[in-house]
Image 1: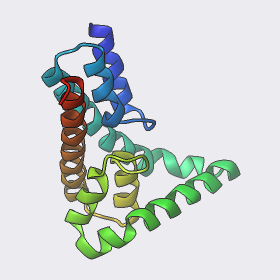
Image 2: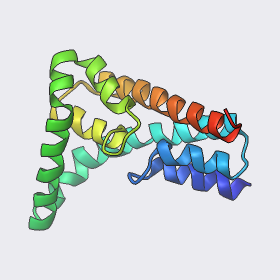
Image 3: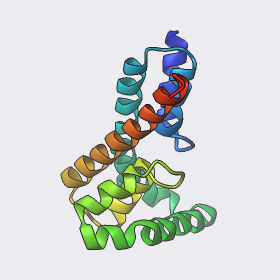
Length: 151
């Protein structure tokens, strides 16, 4: 049971799923749906400070490597084109909406990169990402709970 909760949290930390995978995983493993929501949500929030640390401190050293630089530019371009119009037009709310959409390519990883690229103030970016993660997690949680209960 604890192992399943840890795995659900790891999925929520992972860029390959975030809470969009962690929450359904935990609920499908029979864990308490409220506990799963809280722990996966908190794990997903932890990604933002980790990403900001990476982008601020570690990214500049990796940019010296050609493969990494090419990949980073590709991801930056995708983040700007995917979220740029929303963030430039709506600011805080645009970032919330971008992170909130429970689809691949959106979420706290892309939101962190977008807030870094658009130089959004850290506190504002954190609250926008946290709000978006909350609503995204809530949407996934509700769909999972209703579908497992046969609604």
